Image 1 (cartoon, helix red, strand yellow):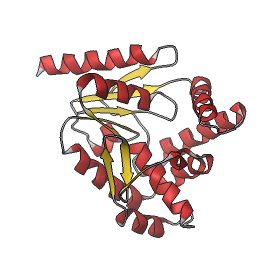
Image 2 (cartoon, one colour; image 1 turned 45 degrees about the horizontal axis):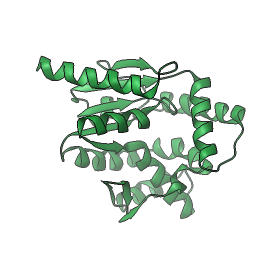
Image 3 (cartoon, one colour; image 1 turned 180 degrees about the horizontal axis):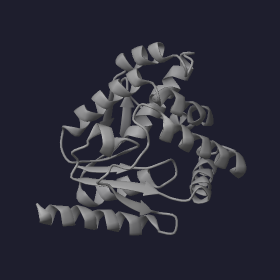
Image 4 (cartoon, rainbow, N blue to C red; image 1 turned 180 degrees about the vertical axis):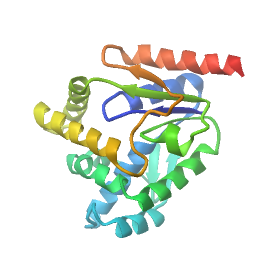
Length: 217
């Protein structure tokens, strides 16, 4: 398997999809799992600070991945998981130990099915610490904010670039300092700054790394 970690807007999803497609692997977006659970919690009126209620929700939620992406309780996840209110709450929801325990259980079950490119924030450190290939992507906060702004605009969501930059900075600080599964590179991860690289260039570098590790085995 290939583990790709990094903060919001670093290019994880684009790169992970490209690498999975090139290698013929499945693609697991663990961030989408936390977003989907957050959307479900908000829809049920559960406060993002309510750890016990969120843990119970995670325990009773069915999560899996199909050819078209994440499936929650038997239904494909729609754009509601990318809504601004979900973005604002997902860090708080994902910080609860019980929530992470349940979603990691789901993630490991999916990873056990075969060759997978998994993306997230703790794949190489917590979910799959024995992954043979670990990559940590990053980019400047200005570039990450521009990417997310463009993505949201294409999806019909209006948000100012400065406010988005502030939101990403807050999420970086929260994710990196949380006591449970903080956002940090694995000690043996290859770090790639994507700020001035095209997605194709980054995908090619990860594929080259995969082939290098295969030849070394």
